[in-house]
Amino acid sequence: GTAEISGFDLRLHESRRRTLEHSVGDLFPGAGAMRDATFWCGLRPMTPDGPPLIGRTELSNLYLNTGHGTLGWTMACGSGKVLADIISSRVPDIDVRDLAQERYFR
Image (cartoon, rainbow, N blue to C red; front, side, top):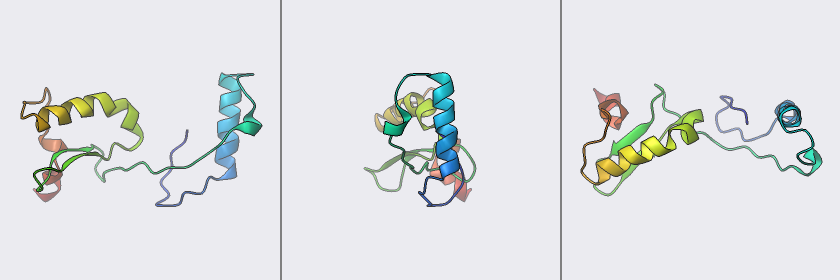
């Protein structure tokens, strides 16, 4: 896939599609017919400072695990473990103070 900062514009630009087709063809020659491929665009929530938001909110039954940007899949298991620890009142294996939404209000 690709990523670009474009606000909420979900149009797939033809140049991006061609790049994807070329890359797939190079990496997986003969793996399938590109003419049958379905392309789509989605949003990747990001925080303004980079690290995701993980933790409690002011609502007792609402927790955050968002804002991973392009690293969503990469950080999924670790973020899930951290959030499970927080919800279960266990101490996470990492310091989570800089992942809390309060970092924006210090």
